[in-house]
Image (tube, rainbow, N blue to C red; front, top):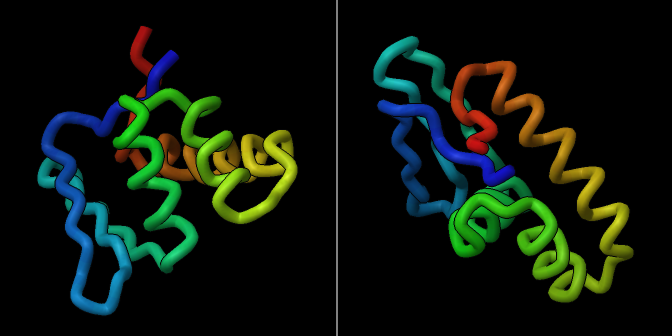
Length: 89
């Protein structure tokens, strides 16, 4: 299942390279450092497909793909809990 931003969520990469996610509906605002910014960009590049995003990041950072997938799953779960993303069938 692909991961999609909830309707009304904006994503802005700031001048310092951090990502800011903001829900226009709930007002939730999260700032992300460089690692989470790269995760977001990889997810968007791969149309929300976690496996492909994790594989890309694992290759770029010379990490075990299973470790990267686990880390990505945790972070996406946190974004889901904050109402910023959803699983789309």
